[in-house]
Length: 153
Length: 331
Image (cartoon, rainbow over all chains, first blue to last red; front, top):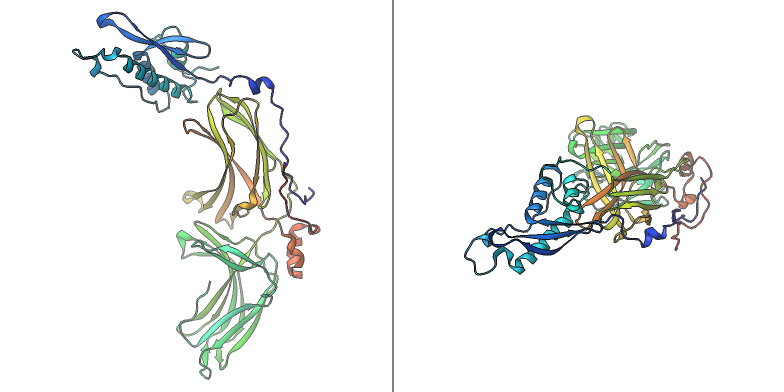
């Protein structure tokens, strides 16, 4: 090997980047929005659902669905699951001056918390192939009798 | 390192014959300070004079012998009592008797083998020193003089690049490449990171140089890791097909050559750690060992005959032509 008098610091050769890769959307980037809260039902049987929207799919979920997802992940995956926005039990007591858990400001707060929760989970490499997460984000409804496990692509 | 015989009758002093011409280098001491010491290479002769000065002229110094030793030893900090000497040479300067006046003794250790490089680390120290001793009935008078030894190498014949594809399935796939596996201490690491698949939100990427000092054997092995450098190579989120260049100049960092299993007592190894950090502060990393070696200076031309012999032992061919040291190439 010849002894260079000046260090060779030229860049190594690299494949030129494909234009579709360079300007295309980030590949499979999971950016999830929690939208459009809607309160369904009347009186004591009301509940609020939220639209969970990904690039290619949209589903409707309620707070207890998020709780279910959290429990599944805590049991099966190795990740430290981020916290959900509060259950707000006090707001469910009768004789309140306001709408309780159907108060607009509370729903908005909860919506933001749920959005943060789901994005943090979906961004974690160890949670990305959990079947419960895929079902939560893509299936019409959650089958609580599913078989837990990992999705192999 | 020096200690004087307390108060007493005589003082010893060691002076090298080539003290005027021999190069001195900086070397870190155990407490982190930097001192200058004479630099020697393997095979060089160590010669000089031992001056014994009587403090009170007229008062005679009785002794059981005067000698000078050249010692190379390894000291493990957790086992201070046991010094492992791998080089030990003695020259007797005077037989038991009396000194009636100050005297100077010549000594020469010819073509001394110095197989390892001087090293002062976190848990172990390898040092070479001269020690002149006047043996007496109750207490000896002695003086030590430390020297620094450096081991030189030439460009390795085989120096393959490091190229690997790593990742987390369906999440992050990268291909990284470093131009060599063996770098000299003033070399440049040229490389690239090529992104094959990116499904996480990366915030930035850096390269760390980690030094691992390993002491002890068998069940009592102890590794001490130290991050010598952190160098950010990318800020922001990459996409598929993107290639990030690496250009890391080693001359700016304080490093030693790679030392493997020195006298079966310790090792010093270096690793490149490629670290990616995502938006949630999660760290993804890949560690790869590199070999560091010490290249001889051009200044060697002005060294004494003996040093050139030592250098040629390693070079195997002609010393390198005089030319400017590695200059930074601007892109």
